Image 1: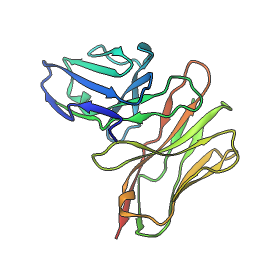
Image 2: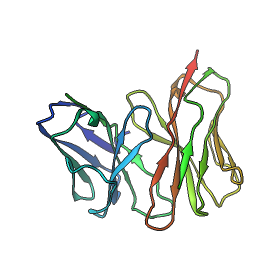
Image 3: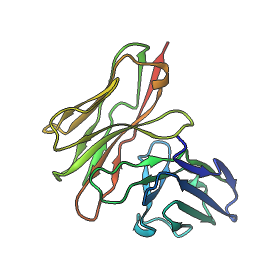
Length: 115
Length: 116
């Protein structure tokens, strides 16, 4: 379970705050993903990076800003969030996007509460 | 559009018994993969089992096996000899390996309780 780590595990923030979520993978993968997990909804893919290049932005509001400085690290910068953004944010990694045998490995998630 | 449906929001099983979780999907693509992931309470999502659509043989991983019915677009998960540690949310997911829309499509999940 330590292949993909996420910090912090829990975060409470006000709507005017700026915070960042961090993800690190120790698996030698080249693709990284941000997902939002809310109750009663399927996992929502937010962003995808492949070899540090963003390949997908699933119509995510601009108050979420991803950053991928290298293949091992992924950040999600948060600002002026809304209460409905409260959710579990999951990071995942895989060998590389589009590889037919790819499997995604997940981190433990950051439980975000927006007050 | 691709969809994944898990029709059982909650299920329970007695320890040491067998349980089957259902999943149906819809896609017009021929090259795809199906996954079952497990998310224990407050713990990481982990891969349970994976099935390539082109393989007729059902995948198995120890006590976990699938019943893949391609024509019916059904992909159920069977857990044999259930253990307390199997209690978790189980997600079925579909990966389309075609075009520019390669991503996992997830079901809503089935919460499995294991009774001692």
